[in-house]
Image (cartoon, rainbow, N blue to C red; front, side):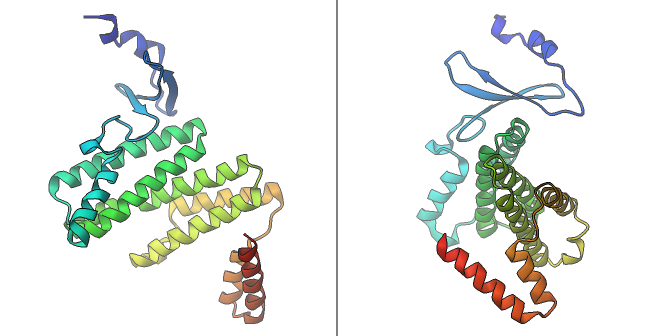
Length: 246
């Protein structure tokens, strides 16, 4: 057995820690950089671009890209078969694993990119799913993906010294999550949801640190709820002005 097949030294020099996600970048023999994540009984290695396992399903960068092309060929009537559902599940897990690596490394733009890929894959599957049970098995993960995406996008804006925009990004993510809870008729669970609570705590902390008040969208929502329609009209005008300037 060659030295390249012996993992004892690698694992001994990088012990697994139960309470910490161990992630690092490694340069391979061919010069490319990959991510490595320490897991309980070994190490996962992930490519930094494309599909994390480095494969090209049917010649495409990801399985999602392959499915999009298939949908162009077969149209809206396309229904995923069992094998395709299995490949979707694999890609979903792989992008989750890389997403948490990016978050651990504080590479927030990459985390947003991978979250967007997963959300697009979920949207596709919702449209072309073979049955409701499988759809729900994916959709129950959407709040988690939205949480990661919102968190990463806000932290990216903080890195760019844009705290007010970061707060607005968190509010946007919370609005998306509320809409999801309403869609599945579980709105009463929204306020108690762990991801909602954590995003609200994050927003509160940013407001406290940067002395930022409510965003215009939040003030508009509150004014409408309180039936303060004159104030709501002024806030809508201000939002329209800002939109036209952007």
